[in-house]
Image (cartoon, rainbow, N blue to C red; front, side, top):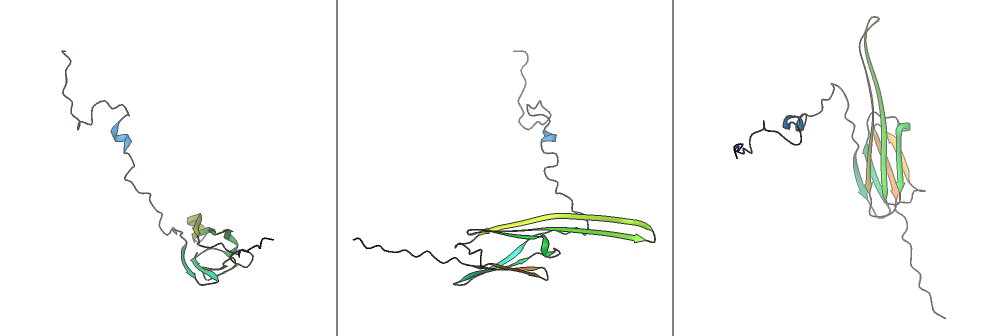
Length: 147
């Protein structure tokens, strides 16, 4: 009984079974640093619906149309794009700064009705992707007469 010690729950210097408490939260509150002039890619979209089709306007600036991919799976739509950018500053023959950026962005959403992928259209101009997604005709039920 000679080794009695008071327990202090707020004492962070005591032996910790999980290791040093400072290492536990190290870097937890630190946000990643963005480089200057580095674009942050996001796909922002507007979705409209009428009786026959859905219309989607997706903002994807700085991307070539060959680098955009649209996948349709029933009522699930996925848009993905890849961006590459190289920037080099020269003064005479000496390179002062050279930067490269490569990134991929994707966005998926689900619609209320299935889409007819055979009649769907996609156009890309001035950084805006326009999708026309016709709704599939509802399967009509047929009554059978019993003979």
